[in-house]
Amino acid sequence: MAAMDVRSGLHPQTTAPWWREAVFYQIYPRSFADSDGDGVGDLRGIFSRLDYLAGTERSLGVDAIWLSPFFKSPMVDGGYDVADHCAVDPVFGTLDDFDALVAEAHRRGLRVIVDLVVNHTSDQHPWFLESRSSRASAKRSWYVWRPGRDGGPPNNWCSEFGGPAWTYDPATDEWYLHSFAPQQPDLNWDEPAVEAAMHEVMRFWLRRGVDGFRVDVVHKIGKDPLLRDNLGTFVGPSHHRPGHRFDEDWPSVHPRLRRMRRVVKEFGERMMVGEVYLLDQAAMAMYVRWDDELDLAHNFHFMNLPWSADLIRTAVCELDRLLEPRGWPTWCLNNHDHPRVASRYPGEAAARLSAVLLLTLRGTPFLYQGEELGLRDGAIPEEQRVDVAGRDPARCPLPWEPPSVAGPGAGFTAGNPWLPIAPDAETRAVSRQLDDPQSVLSLYRALLALRRREPALRVGSMAVFDGTGPVLAYRRGVPTASLLVLLNFDGQPATVRAADVGRLAIRGTIEVSTTMDDLGRGVEAPEVELGPFEGLVLREA
Image (cartoon, rainbow, N blue to C red):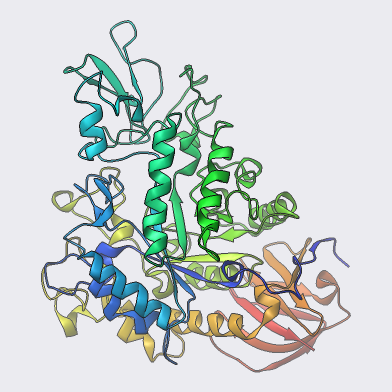
């Protein structure tokens, strides 16, 4: 019998917090559905497509939606440059539209979380306009201002988008800090008034009924107050740089998160998931503490792994050990900032195998709109590029209908889409896949239905097996049932023996396969052969 890593599943017989059992679906509002024909997605568009997500027999079957920023913004960085935290940008609609969306989502049992942008604002935010007006401004200390050094920036910190993280302001003869674009000045979380103001922003949305927050680059709200130079040679974004850093992940971030947690708890069963972009799982895990800091944190180490059963197996087992007993894993493979699975891994085969992986691992999965269609990244001509950091290909509008049927807007819009529709829209549109029992969308629907039926997949234990080569093999179980998951990451057939998974024979019924063939077929054999990139979920007898 192969060695294995066994985790008991935290209190599988007790009622789990809703977010532990939920599947989240990220909506990038500009690209989901356009209700008014201006070519940009909006809140009413999302409202009109809720049936696709939840509430009917034909729905995808997710439990919660995460809305990327829809706040008032100059849109330099896709809305993450917020000019008013408590207002909806007119391109997306109104606060009344938001309230109606939340009410209709809740009527369907669908939770709603929103982005909380805490590290920075737009340079058009009233707070910053007042801060830069004078060195004597009452809000001067709300941002990080410093005199220059030797005719240049105050230190060697770099922007995530390239170049220095400082911009000179000639009106007041000082430099301001921006971890991202110059139009996104960093808030100074060492100023208590800033923290209090952000707590009020949280309360504003919690009072409107949101079920929690996805907290943007939360590891950045703790920085060295002495602003010491970073040590090492830095090239590219901080999470890929070697060296000792003073501009993120400072110990002060943790008490700040605990105080944010107290605000969330004022409103009952709400939650926080953090964008903690640290590729070290041990560092990321320090942010995940039930009832103390974050409930969940996106795992960017996992998201950035090569296509390898061994590396994924190692990462899954390592994170499980790091989070016990007070944390819960989060799994995702793409989002609005990262290339799609079908583009960076082996095409549709990877899209199918990753679906089984994400929805059967122990933890909370986050899906990104279009992932369930197997969409690839778009091809964006130079003259149509919008994003400051080149992330447009992952943000192409969702195709609801084939362009040959619905025209160039592919059911996303009656107008001209703000970015080109995905290049594979003709074959991967929602309407093309919805009634195809072997489509990627049908696979996702089958997996989500299985997850809803099976406590083993939501809160059960997990045993991960070693010695299975290119096949990632693990068992999910509760006392009354167990499911065996076999995922072949190789482009060649692979064999799994019963002894590899702790059995004398592999016996069970196929619940789901990546090809959507042989569902319900019984298996009883000393070994199972998997085709290239094939995955199976078997209910064990």
